[in-house]
Image: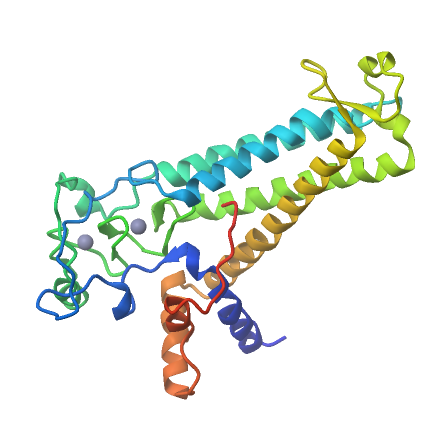
Length: 329
Ligand SMILES: [Zn+2]
Ligand SMILES: [Zn+2]
């Protein structure tokens, strides 16, 4: 497969992810209406510049991320790992699974929190008290920014790869994209934290998929192997299972266990598809020395040169034609 094929494929597939990336006014229709325009709505000051992913406003996507993460951790460690057989030959196997999966999840949580917590702002922006209220996003000032490297909104000179993010209302150093799932900009200060969080999330999901798939297969092959916990000795009905072993055993019927297993598998598989693709995309653009924004700009310029009648993907997205997946990250 040639690099042109890979590039074309990624360019095409990336449009699916555009909903999670706010490129902060790169296209003219994504910025606030200018003063004096007949279409302009009355301007209201945007919120104060945001510091990191914990700053308000916090929208639905980050809540979905944390809910999915907690749900997966809860079901995996509370339901499926305790069901793993730890018989004579499998003791080491089960214990390793617990440690490896637990360690991976802990590592992922640490890098995820770091990605969200790091303030990706430009050094000059961070040096001043930039959390002043009422900075108005004015596109005419943004055009000056690109020529002089002086941001009239932040009131500082910024570096070459910086970009004023509309969602954060401040200049981000080495701007890659604004991730609405993390509620924070991804720039040079937190890029590798972000990359590692995607990689560790993929590793966690692969691990969870292996565990749940294994339990589901053993369920159909040899149910007794899943009933190795001593508390199952009190259960005579083969259709009854115990969740949240060993501390708070909860009796459920087999269909409940199977439904939870199927739901977890669907969630894990969806997450793997989306995050796996995101990981491959970032490996690809980093190999080319590009940020997400630069990659998209490059694709946009090539498309304009070809002057094909087909609408640009960004325009399609703005008009609501492009599909936007929901990812757990
Ligand atoms: Zn700025
Ligand atoms: Zn941002």
